[in-house]
Image 1 (cartoon, rainbow, N blue to C red):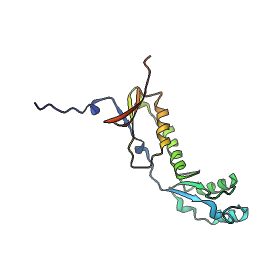
Image 2 (image 1 turned 90 degrees about the horizontal axis):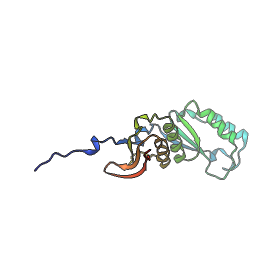
Image 3 (image 1 turned 180 degrees about the horizontal axis):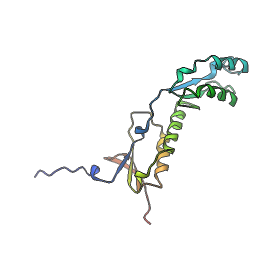
Image 4 (image 1 turned 120 degrees about the vertical axis):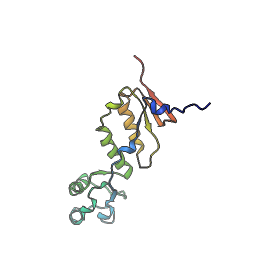
Length: 170
């Protein structure tokens, strides 16, 4: 009475897409420029330029950097531009925003440059569990990229997936 157990998932055409596989290594750092402003609110150009000039930018080598100001100061665009010119030789990527915005931006670059042809006309499951900080926006972006290519899209694990999309039959 012992029948061989067959793993139907392994034998199926189902392809797993795991965003965690694309998580780039590198420290994520947030720089709050409020400390570079007079009383945390006023940008004095001369003082600001001095701070930027004397800051140790080498500490951001191979890092992903988010720039922001935690106060309600009005920071002109040129101030962030001045900072990014100093960061450019060191950081892998720099944005204005918080760490979630940084992760979203990193994944946007990655997803936009992926070759997804291996998923053409195949059922795809976008893996849901992640040990790394994959932003929710990354799931939306990859879903949009896969929709015109995949036969179907599901979310979760092979044993308990949620169907999301099925290409209409012609």
